[in-house]
Length: 518
Image (cartoon, rainbow, N blue to C red; front, side, top):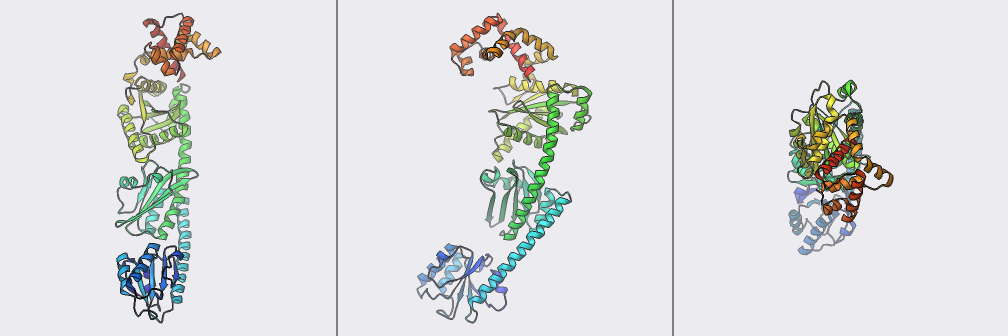
């Protein structure tokens, strides 16, 4: 509105509410009604001579209050018709509400003001369109030159004189630029939950005496890649929004292309880890491929196994894997992850794997509390530290340390292995296969031919310490059904599961079968 005062020939004078001069005008509207608000949408500059107001001060104040409630940008009051000057009651009310009142001298027609506003709005739209094209060309040029997210933020801050922070979905800082910004932790914490988790909002804006902020989701396809927050120590303008939204488009393309490259690398590395953990890749070939995957000249490796406490769908496991990639990248000289058997498995080179595992769990919990991703309910198993040739053994010890510690701790260590350690030392595989076949063969054959579930029933019975009620509850069946199945198993095995010696032998065979299934 302050631009109107600079236009030649209008001779407008501020008589009240000068602090409202910075408001933007969306249109100009002339009305002599005592209540023009039904025909206003907000942002207009209202022009009137006050013919319908009369001399009653209460009516004059009420008129101003109505305009304020309707969200008008300002009031132009034409004098020389019903009033020689703008009524004092209107000036006082406008001053209190911060509504700018401009007095229009008699020789100046309202049509001159509306034409001036229309011309200025047209020129402003043209300038915005030109700036939008220039912004697009500048950012497109950056991308073609191989620029990254930080370069885009630098361009935004240079154009609009503010600050910008780009967050990943967990609240981590991808890039930042500009000066005078609050701490990233404060900025992220202030975001509405619906925007931070990508569930409800696409954009959020707020203003305070300290300045303004605009937060926008960065999306590629249906996936939220990041959140961009732009701030300035002033009220945001339309051009700020244009620049930010152009930046969001470019950032979405950059992050999506980066994700595609990373996902391709992760798939290749994941296939390698899966082959190594399964024991199908070993020797010089394993060593050579690990070097290509980011483990050059590494002599000591450790596998970690992480799984959600309550299970997770494939998308949840992939999110967990992505989160671990980010954390490990900051803490390890070499690390890779893969999703396998309903868990996330990692291979790392680190001096203290146990310390690393604890830090991973703590950071996942902290990240989940900030972002609401639900990743904090996770347990981890730490494998033995081995040479390249022992990668499978490290993975197996991580998985079974996790199982051995189940219910007691969120972290399983090699020291928790118990009987698993004895069985793992009984490798190679043919030895374990022969043992399992000798002890459990009849049960496995019956289950395969008749779907009788005898192996699982025996496992639940022994795990329950021989207690029928607890074992049946674990399987979700009646205790008499469990008793019948166990009696069948005893006959097929020619063993008495009430005997500690027979029960131990069967239990060891069941654990050996678990190792063979991994």
